[in-house]
Length: 73
Image (cartoon, rainbow, N blue to C red; front, top):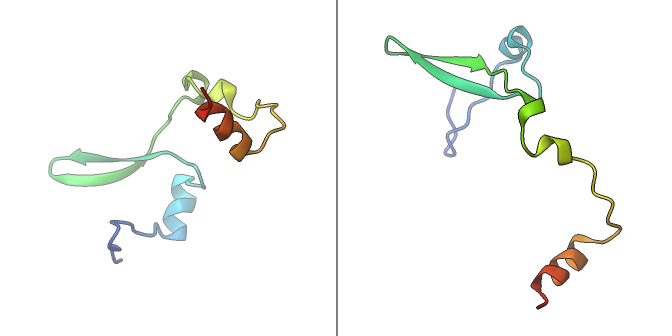
């Protein structure tokens, strides 16, 4: 396995399958007795302070229009 210049590695498919890692899965590195382990975290999305707002925007405006409004005084 090789680390890219950005510090990235590809987790092999069989490891992703065993750990249940899919896109958007939160992972962490844990150190134990000088060894590091990749672990899947159990981030509670219900308590994520922004999660309840995801996908509820109703503005029929483009990003450009919204940015223009925020820049006007």
